[in-house]
Image (tube, rainbow, N blue to C red; front, side):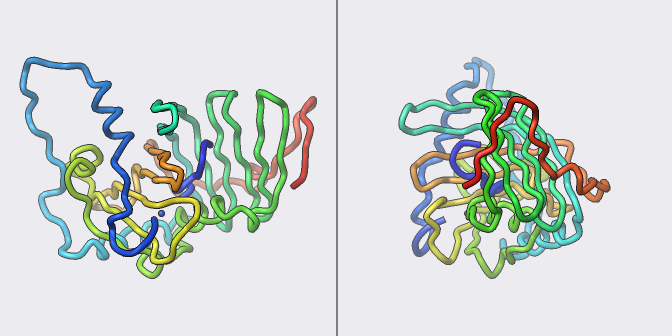
Length: 250
């Protein structure tokens, strides 16, 4: 999955205040890839016409959305920015989640590892090497944070400092239907430095987010066709070792 999930996915920032945010490398890269045009494009709306005075009120909306979701599935696109090589890698796939603590990250590209978790056990499936790494969910801080965030188990207002995003981040991730928030954990985290959320103004659904990692890399996730309470079966999250694969337990 390249560095942390997030989020949220796998799903967060460092030090006092908000000064720790790194430049939006993903946004700069995407802008650089846009074709030049001699015609001036009409300015798009970068925020809803009205927003709450406090960004904390938006987090309450987010919390309510995920508290009401027993399960969730969505398609995702991921852009991973590697600052060492100054390059971005784009991948896509399908995400499925179910309370408590169950998930599947299924990448379309077999060069990417898939992830399965049944609430207690986590499997990382490397198709290119036919290796499966088996660990306990509670021993993986990144997966734990992702699951808690995505399902609201991690009380956002208690865990994070929050403000409305400004400047390039609003232009890149905002539109007439989404608030853009910058979140910073109140306690330092060794895995990630920052998180930006694009929150649907009516539902509180997180439609995209960026995770800024402590190594300078970042993960930008776009979620599409999001559905909740679809009745996902528990068996979906029980990984079965395919023929020819080798499982190693850590």
